[in-house]
Image (cartoon, rainbow, N blue to C red; front, side, top):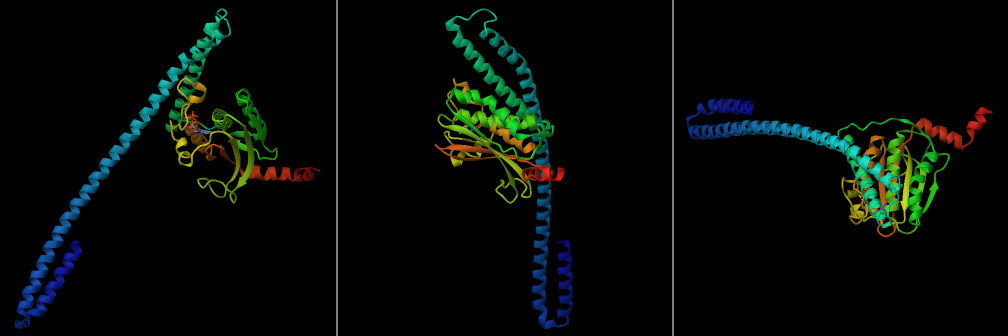
Length: 336
Ligand code: ADP
C-alpha cells in the first residue's frame, strides 16, 4: 500500500508540473491537489486499519494455538485417567466375577433355591460391568494412540468358524439359525487376529442381540477396487469383505452413521436386561479397530427386515494372487 501511495504522489507531482505551465488551468491544479490529498489520507487510514487487522489476526491465531494445545493436553489427561481408573476397576471386578462363579458352582455350599436368582443377577451385572470397563479401557487406549497392532498370517475360514462357536450357544438359546459361507479359496490375510476377533464377536453378538426370529449369516468374499468397496478405502486395494447379516429389528437410515459414535444406542434394552442393554461402545470400538488394521466397517439395513454389517479387511496383492493361483489349480500344475 505504501508503494501505491508513493506512485500516486509521484504521478500527482508530474501532472502538477505540467499544469503549472498554463495559469488558465490553475483551478484544475488546485482540484488535483485536493483529490490527491484526500486519496493520501484515505490510503493512510486504510494502511492503519490493515495493520490493526493483521495484529488482531496474529493475536487470534496465537490464542487458537494455545487453546488447541490445551485441548490436546486435556484430552490426553482424560484418556490417561480413564485408562488408569478402568485398570484399577478390573481387579476387584475380576474378584467379584470369580467368587460369584464359585458361589454358583456350590463351592461354598449348595445355594438355596431362592438364592439362585440373585446370584445369577449379581453375575450378569458384574460381567456387564467388566465388559463396559474393558471397552472404556480399549477406547482410552485408542484415543491415546496406544492400541498396538500385531500382524500375523490369518486363515479366515477356520478363524471365523472358531469365533462363531462362541456365540452359537446364545443364538441356539434364542432359536436362531447360524449359517456360514466362507470359501476356502479366500486369500490369506496379514492382520491382527485379536482385533479381527473382537470386531467379529461384536458384530455377531449384536446380530444375536437384535434378532428375535430367523437367523444370522456370515459370508466372506473378495472385493477388488473396481467392485463396490466403500469410498473411504483406497480404490486400488483388494479386500476380503466379511459380512454378518441378521433378520432382526434393523436400523433406520437416519441412524446408520450415528450408531458408530461412542455411547450411541438406538434400541437399548431395558436397564435390568444386561444381555440386551449393551454399552453403546461396541461399534465405535469395532470401527476404530477396523481402521487401525487398514480396513473399515459399513452397514446396510432396513427397519423390520434386518441388517448387514460388513468388515473390510485389506489383502496383500501377493496373497490375492496366490489365492487365485490356488483356486485355478495352477499351483498343482506348476508343482507337477
Ligand atoms: P450396544 O452395546 O448398544 O449394542 P453397539 O455400539 O454395539 O452398542 O451398537 C450401537 C447401536 O447400534 C445399538 O444400541 C443398536 O441400536 C444398533 N445396532 C447394532 N447392531 C445392530 C443390529 N445387528 N441390528 C439392529 N441394531 C443394531
